[in-house]
Amino acid sequence: MNNNMIHFGSVSVGEGKPCVVIAEGCDNHGGSLTKAKEMAAAAKESGADIIKFQLHLPDEEMVKDEMDKVSSGGAFKQWGSLYGFIKAHQLSVEGHADLMAYCKKIGIEYLCTPFSLRAAELLRDMGATAFKIGSGETEDLPMLEEVAKMGKPMMIATGMTTKEELDGTVTTMRAIGTPFCLAHCISVYPVKRLRDLHFGTIAAYRERYDVPVGWSDHTPPEGITDEESGRQFSENEILAVALGCGAKFIEKHFTLDRATKDADSYFSHDPQTLKSLVENVRLWERALKERDGVLTGEKGVRLWAKRSLVAVADITRGTPLTRELFTSKRPGVGVLSKGYKAVLGKKASRDIAAGEIIYPKDLL
Image 1 (tube, rainbow, N blue to C red):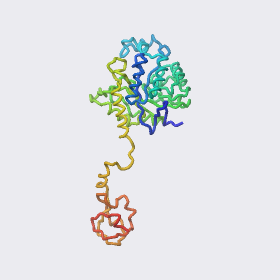
Image 2: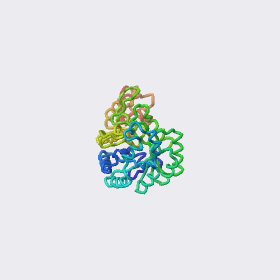
Image 3: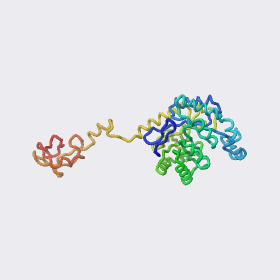
Image 4: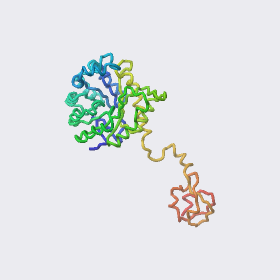
């Protein structure tokens, strides 16, 4: 198994592949299949590779009375709790099956997060090509093991998880043998402190686990005004650092209209800002490519910046060249100094005055 490459349907994630952009639709469709399809089409038009949704079966994934006690405020206040929000916004199982087929028809990969084993089973039966596992389920080994046994590639988010805890999850995945990648994630909505991004984790996970690692992002399109320094950092600046640290995919929350007061619309992208993000990803990828040879713009500089062999004393015709007879000086128009060993012992074909550049034609 190639740990450095994973396939989500037709989309490949890993070394040597372009960064994959995932539009995280969440439940921003509000339970409307029509709107979910519009989101999928808009994500494709914006250049995203994958559109991701969530399959919720509230009574399979949570205990209502207890959830009401711990999630009644914040973004879920108007719905009473997270349970109420999901009941109001969930897309039906039949809707997901229709949506999956629609995504295939228009040419964008469908990915979904199951929040219960039953949800995963339903997605499998629909023909899902892969699973995204949310940060809350990363350590849910009873569920994780059963989902992994389905044999579908898995993207596993790592928010709220220590390195030691993640070791346990990775050990479980390795034992089962299902291919997986990791999504570096900060489970704060939205992230407000620059240092909380912890982008060093991307490279650390890549080295520790030898799998592709990406970034599941919760920063708004406007970027971050760092709470500690007060300085503004644009999304493009933040994006550049993530890509520079080796992120193989970027997942961004997505909605059709940020003015719609969904639970996460305040940090989601709309089609226009998602399109801009995709364009920026592709531009940064050019900058991050390994160089190969001399750039066109460097050729003129190379001519005067490189160094040639220069005689330090008069050299008469027929004299064998020794190390003591030359130094190196700019410009690099003669025998380049890097090749001095190759000309040692060669004879001068003409009289060369001290201070003159030595050219290839000057040597026999």
